[in-house]
Amino acid sequence: MSLLSKSIVAALSALVLAAPALAQPFPEVIPLPTGFQPEGIAAGRGSTFFVGSIPTGAVFRGDLRTGDGDLIVPGREGRSSIGIKVDGKDRIFVAGGDTGRAFVYDATTGAPLADYLLAPSQPTFVNDVVLTRDAAWFTDSFRAVLYRVPFGPGGSLPGASDVAELPLTGDFELQEGFNLNGIEATSDGGTLLVIQSNTGLLFSVDPGSGVTVRLELVGGDVSFGDGILLQGTTLYVVQNQLNRIAVIDLEPSLSGGTVVDSLTDPDLDVPTTIARWANFLWAVNARFGIEDPEAAAYSVARVAA
Image (cartoon, rainbow, N blue to C red; front, side, top):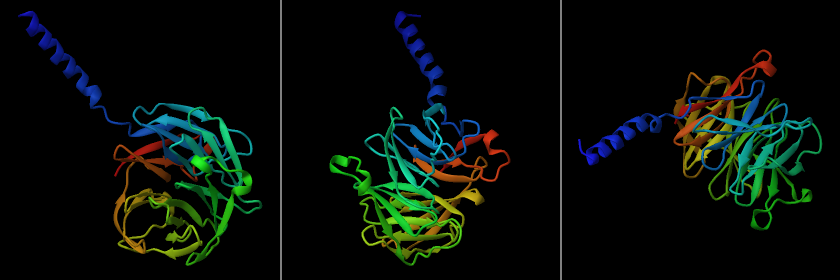
């Protein structure tokens, strides 16, 4: 065999050996630290993702390609991490649950950047957050309001006195139990969408006036609705206790929608929130109600979308 032929054979052999590695699928389940008790998830730059811990406020940073990860924000007393989002300026925005606060961290170093008091009194549960061009918006599961943290010039973080409360009017009515949960925004930020967990109702919110309008759904319901994710005119709603994710085709007017699918997966175990990356949904398994949560295993599950 000539030297050229040997070189060709060697190159082809290298490609064959490399093919399985290139074709290796993303992990189906990504383990989180034992006892972590997660709730929110956000996709960051590249394949990076972030998950927050309810009882400690810690934030875990991992890689959706490999499943590897570690804590970037350590847990500390008096903090909690429920809903979580990451923006293009590499900042992590965290809804602080029953602390009534919102926290902001550097997504590269984990350093704290801001701490905002949203709800000055109890009862409160700052549950989820969505980012628009000009503000971070937070829901409260015990109050008929949204909180607005407006961005300054160049997207800078505001001072504490700039935080505003938007009272909600219209179709939304506060009920006993957990009310507003997941929140999303249209691409221009002109309309917000929220879900009321205890009723399974979806509402649009005018971010200027606070007027809410109930979305009429056909083809199914979104009972036990938790985190929501808007992709174009498709809305994904996590139904935590049902271990499924509803897929809704929204009307252009946002007056209603059709439930066109219900995604399930054997790896779902009381999922709460989702992120989308590489044409998959990645769901946090909160495992609410499990015995001895401080010693339990937790994970992020990959779901075909």
